[in-house]
Length: 309
Length: 115
Image (cartoon, rainbow over the protein chains, first blue to last red):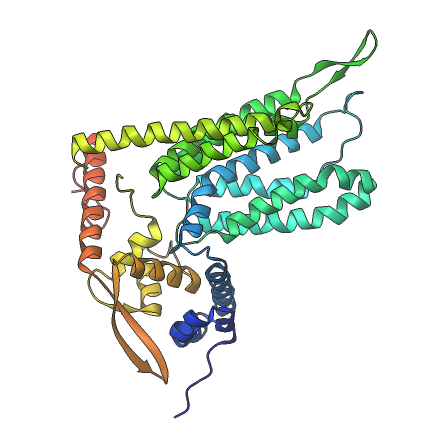
């Protein structure tokens, strides 16, 4: 009897894995299609391709890259969602003289509220589907904003859209068998969303008097993106330090953060000199995160020795 | 460092292997049954998790056989996997019992009803 050919999707696997598992995975795909129908079969094939891609990029859950990616999710999701909520609110406000013309891309923002909502509810599969919508929304917004607001609208939004697309890719690329659905991960997401979202939103709707010329001022609101770059390192320092302290190579990672922070200052003093730049703050907070992680690590180790676990 | 609670897919997979060794598709069906249809593992998730659990020594390959001209592996818990699952079950039971005690509803039976 001849051996049936492995399913075409298994060709995406790295050679060694394909040699070991192509038959088994093909067998499973046939059984799912036979039992649950064609649509279920197609979804399984997509899952196999995703797994193959993770194996090829070293982002599967068996390797440190995949576990690191999974560890980033409770921080990345609330940051993206807080920014999107703020931009959606600011978009509704009447423009002030000093604001200039700003273009927004709500199609890229709305799905992130669903990503955060589903993630907080522990529905990680739904959160991944919403992240897929966020990725499509960001991609579709590029030509859309170019069409509605011209080259300037595109220039204003392309970095934000790229960032949001990257965050959506992060959610989709992270190993699905390590979902941030535990109580601790959901608590972290809720706290980061609150700690970042509230000042970001409050700051972005606050009207201040900008110096518009000699002896004259004009109503203005802070740019939400500048506020994001200011608040994010402050808010993430503590949860990032806790995550680093609990990681397998926590002390080494903390040392790396401290070294990176120092190196950022030594050769490139510009990070402090950029007008309104937050590079210096990011570099400083990276170092602070490393130091905090070492302190937390020491506290955890001491407690373990005392309690015996 | 302090042990973290198991992620749900890992807990469900180890539970699905607790009473008998199973192959890939049987594991997907068993996880579906254990979670009462709430968690449906996809092939990519299953093999990603199995790969990790094999490397961590929590799961082993029980046997390899040819079924319909294709290789099929059957997976089983290792001693370390059984120990870890038992510890997690104990942790969950202690939490559930404490919740039931504080609510004043008595111990929770395996079918979800209170005694």
